Image (cartoon, rainbow, N blue to C red; front, top):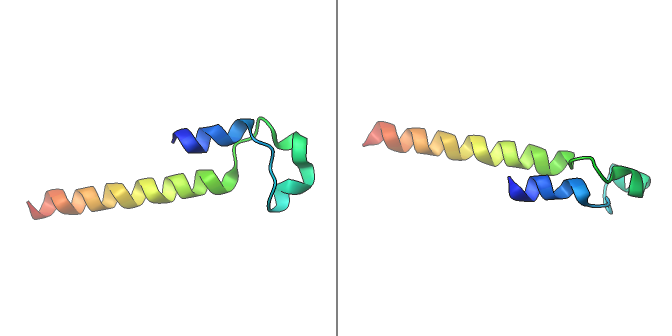
Amino acid sequence: EKGMKATISMISKHGRASWHREKTVGVQDAGATAMYYLIESFVRHLISRIEIST
């Protein structure tokens, strides 16, 4: 989560957002946000599977 939030103060250098450079400061990176939620849901799923099997 910390890394995802850290993207708010960064200037985009790659992808579509790179065209906007300084305008992207203050906007959370969509890719970082998507990956955060993907990994978070995967970890929650694994934890629930472990709890079921024990």
